Length: 270
Image 1 (cartoon, rainbow, N blue to C red):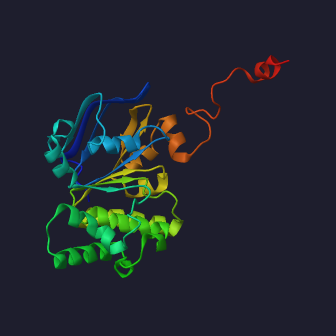
Image 2 (cartoon, rainbow, N blue to C red):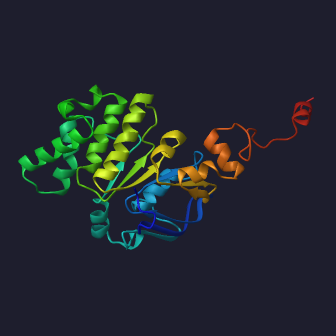
Image 3 (tube, rainbow, N blue to C red):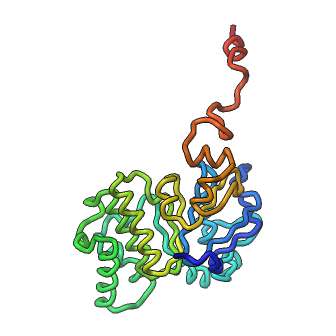
């Protein structure tokens, strides 16, 4: 069981970020605790994927700080930032496999890029990681020969091949059939526990995220609307949270885009 008193691995304080005139975050503050699976949910366009990029130092905030394992990410020079990034695995929504090399070489790529390990050790590490995701037998296949779920699992093997301290998952369940979704859910949970990882999960899939997250932040309009364990969120008195979790078409997030009164609008052109 995750320790509720575990120290934060990621500390975000008073974070502001905008794209042009569009304000994405407005003073966001939160902690991601070591060893836990932390989920982020919210409507499209609320900046969940942007948050992952801010944690990884790919984007810079206009104000505020992001600390990862005690390091102020946006104050690091290039060398220390790259060293920190090596310890952060990333599973992209598309998988982002390299299309011209096979499964084995895709998983081996980070090892070849960032280490000087002998070929035999690289081979052993790649096969260990592929075995962990159930695809050791697929190592000679090309990405074009993989199903969507298999590609996601290969990408997961690649994300863990450098033994990171943390993995960030960007919409890992999108476009998958129910069986494959269940497989990915199980893998995320098992790998987090077996490898002692800290996992950050961004997803619109309420059921899957609630089933494996230890703690969840619900984000909207640049702020944390509510946070807590999955069981506490289910009991939330917030109408907005209940609308999101249950998929109600109307509520605090209205079905209708703001417009003049319907009858007035109809009669306006007459």
